[in-house]
Image 1 (tube, helix red, strand yellow):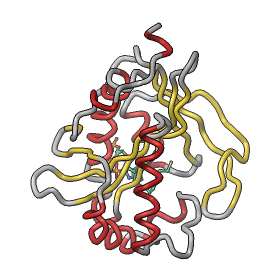
Image 2 (cartoon, helix red, strand yellow; image 1 turned 90 degrees about the vertical axis):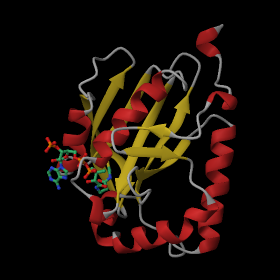
Image 3 (cartoon, protein in one colour; image 1 turned 135 degrees about the vertical axis):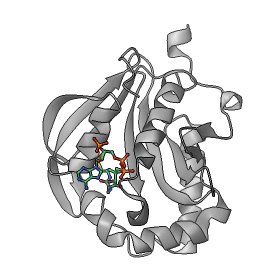
Image 4 (cartoon, protein in one colour; image 1 turned 180 degrees about the horizontal axis):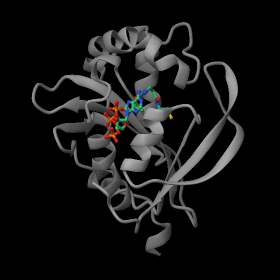
Length: 196
Ligand SMILES: CC(C)(COP(=O)(O)OP(=O)(O)OC[C@H]1O[C@@H](n2cnc3c(N)ncnc32)[C@H](O)[C@@H]1OP(=O)(O)O)[C@@H](O)C(=O)NCCC(=O)NCCS
């Protein structure tokens, strides 16, 4: 029965293209660029992310990260992408569609980040807008969820611009920057109108 079928990895394109950006699976050769961007963006990102492990930026932790991404993808549990600017193929950030629930849910949770030098230039709006049709067609999701801290104006604005609707408020929902923090819950359904 189609509703309960998982996806065939062969269906996946090597790149997901958006307006001025493209998404692709992280590769070992991305390490130097990724570590430089994450290091340069540490102060910008850490208030909004789970605490970075002490060895997070090391090459061996990056290798483990890639192994986990590959295994999660093989098991249809999560899909991780790095985000590149099309013009010069510079790495600008990343997105993950995680915690996929198949069966009668067909849902997944969206997470994202951009490097500080690339913030507020529309890159993540373009990336999320490109991922949405992919998630609802190739990955066959019915529902994309996202959650953010109520003071995260950038994330709220991004989700509203890309057609997510606010559905609720979850107390101490995720441990972010070392503290259990309340979150706003957003979702977008397969049949929601596209705003972009
Ligand atoms: C959230 C984040 C991914 C947005 O990426 P981005 O590429 O800067 O977003 P865009 O440029 O596409 O902008 C999306 C909207 O957010 C708004 N925005 C971006 N940064 C903002 C800020 N600091 N304050 C208020 N609004 C902001 C933009 O103006 C735009 O809305 P508009 O077109 O109506 O003006 C980025 O700010 C980020 O990585 N933040 C730190 C990590 C994080 O918050 N992760 C998500 C945790 S839930």
